[in-house]
Amino acid sequence: MKQFYGMSQRGSLDEALQGLYNPQFIMLLSNDAQFEEHVQALEKRYPGIPSIGCIGMSYQTGVVEHGVGIIAFSDGVTAAANVLEQVSTMPVKYIQRLERDMQTVGGSSRDTVCIDFCAGNDACVLTTIYTALRQRGISLVGGTGDQGKVSANGRVYQDAVAYALVRNQNGRVKTYKENIYHQLGNYRFIASNTDRSNYILGSLNGKPAKQVYKSILHVTDEEILTRTFQNPFGKINGDDTCIISIKEVHGNSLACFRQVNDSDVLILLELGDYQAITRETIAQICREFPRRSAIFSVNCLFRYKLFSEHNYMQTYLREMASLGCHAGFVGYGEHYNNRFVNQSMTCVVFE
Image (cartoon, rainbow, N blue to C red; front, side, top):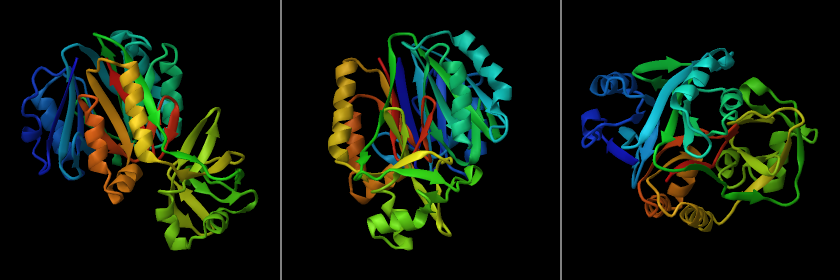
């Protein structure tokens, strides 16, 4: 298979599509002002080709912040794209669409992946989708777009998740998740007074969450929102840790970018040697996939901001480019199988 990446910093879809021939699956990453126009134009240009899209930044060796990016697969891919609607209330109502698409595409854990762009309620959506995917052992990689809009096959949807099943006809696929944080001290918290619908974390071990965070890290209210780049929370999930970013201060509580429930066990994290960690991820991919056709990744907005502030983003993209054809998008939350995480990178590698 082959991966194509095209972009236009000025938002010209024609410019972004230059050189794309006979695609078998297309992803559109556009800006808020032009998204719906681009969705319609893309379908007109490539009618009937499975496609999904969202509002967000794309990248290959540089980042497109406000224009348009196209990532497409060809030459050896079987794909199907669709949506689950009403994700805020009842995404399971549409699960038969995914089950039918799985039958159409075929495939297994060895050669098939699900890529999704979500408009919200991610944790519930992923649980729903993964109940179907795990029957075949199919992995999932994806993320959250901006403005609550996604697209599939030439139509724009709100309150929905767009997904694509992609089967590599010429080799394996495998998904990865990169965490650049580790535990800080021995802090261990039980969450309470949470508001699940608004992602509010009220108390930690019975004390106001804001005060606990401030007293441990010696920061002011104003510094909390930037300190989450260095010190997010982590939720224990078996032998894994899901990163939880702080969105804003909410009275004596903290509003987060992912749901926290009463009785969840949380830890405090600190930033590790992210340059060494990303190099090890690259080395692991090289060991496990000596021959690579494509790498599609999702990087968190907070990782993008962190790397940019440390003048590392361009270096990071150059190092990822050493793997071969690498492209992706900047999400507001990352998806890995049935997990919704923050401040992470998830990716799928195609042999």
